Length: 445
Image (cartoon, rainbow, N blue to C red; front, side, top):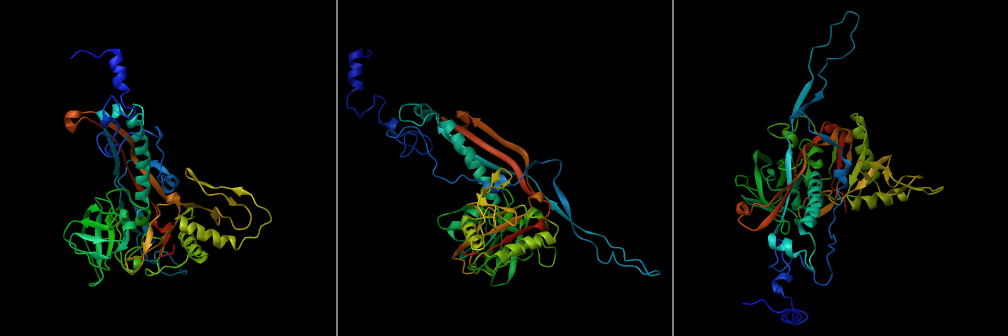
């Protein structure tokens, strides 16, 4: 076929002002960054700018210090001075009995967090055309970076134990809004409310999480039922603050849980051994309002154990409750806004006079939308967010490999004309002193 003349080409390109010489498929939206599906990279009316409609704040992640991993796979914690090794001695009295310290070993290995994205070769080209989003790979790379840090923030603030509302040999059900605290690859143990016993020999590995129905699918072997407790036996991702701020036989929602951060013991945190938490305040799954007494007790426990709180992390619901508590007791002689920094984050503006809004007893307060919430004893009601009082001198995010970006254009390996991108980080959340961390749970929203 001969090439069309210039006049024929112009007439064809202007045939129907709403048609394109490239064909209609080039202006269809898509999902996996192709140009042939219902949603995609083109917006013929509003141009190229893509606005975020998501909460990408990562305040907890930003507040915790980062450090290089170092040449270690764990550490040891001295938890007991030794019985009777120190006492007064009379002039001719016998010496104290010889005893040794109790040393607990903590195993900590790096975890891998990854984020992927991809686009077809065709979409990469057509995204540059009029009505497209521009450089689709650069756009998704930027978005993936936000998602990657957000994932780590969510893992750091994942809840560790919840009462189930239903169960089977391969699944259990929790309220849908908190199901995301269980991640694929996590090992979950069960407290049987009927038999009053634990099944934690190896944990059932999570294979799927439905955040719409709240159903968490696990490997067979442990039978969950209504009112049982499902709690984390080991994490596939980063160890969370909730895993760290836990104690022997803690009672989430009125149940019993023995979370096992860092493989403290093979059997979990059994009652009667050592308490790996400064203060965990539950209320048997019954909601209560945040009070200054609860906060004071958490701070007192940390200081009694030799620590000094550096930051208070809570949900926005508890922040406004605390603000109202403090406002009612303020006496103003003048007002001046100021902020306190912790990590790479800053608190909300507060006042220097009276009781400070941005801090409590000089401790910065950071509200984070990802802070986990408690569940009531009936397992079908989600309460308010928890409050964490932390001494960050003993907390760190140890990085074994900084975030890496890998791009793959091997079409034969993918068996498709697609460009794939991967971000991954290798590291782990570390806590060198469990006794100077605290949590307040079972709060009203």
